[in-house]
Length: 243
Image (cartoon, rainbow, N blue to C red; front, side):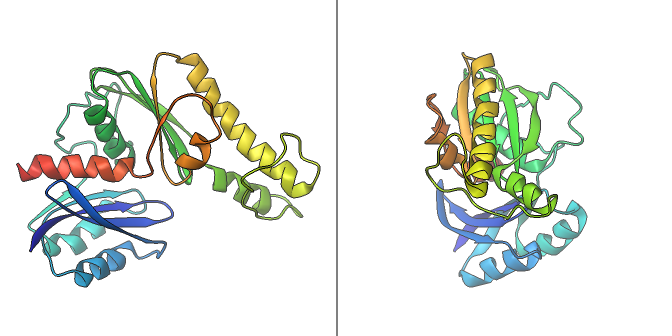
């Protein structure tokens, strides 16, 4: 059977999904550092011929990844700022340093929220905040530390603070070390996000990334939340090249 493959090689995890006729299959995820090896293992696990493979890679240089994956499919799209896209993001800046994951997510926003000014928050290893206007133009964005990166920094750059993950519920003012860390990191991120929302009240707010639902439950403003905006953008690109 012929199908497409969507590959998101992120800073922490690699995600791979078979994609056919508008439908995504099971999500395969791995923190293995050799992402190419992982992609090959996923392909070998299914009885498929890969037509179009679309890859977002922010972990390493593209050249060795492209060389390794090109023989595994009929058409390989290594996403970068030069890639022809299903929408014209019309970058309002020099996009040579723009990560493929941010491009993919911007494509998804532009395709799914046409005619709306949007802010997309991607809660991952880094938190990226990107602006896509109602005409689908990618205006740029900001990069901040993600939640787990903040906890890791507290652990690594101090002598005694532990590495923790926050409880679902904790008081706004900490009375223990772990409580103070949880409140400081989580409320700090919440206030940061709420600051953007307050500054741009007419924008559609979109949360994505691994911690998207965690913060969507805590922030009162109406938001659209999905963990896989990058993969959805890759799917739009695969459809475009298939046609």
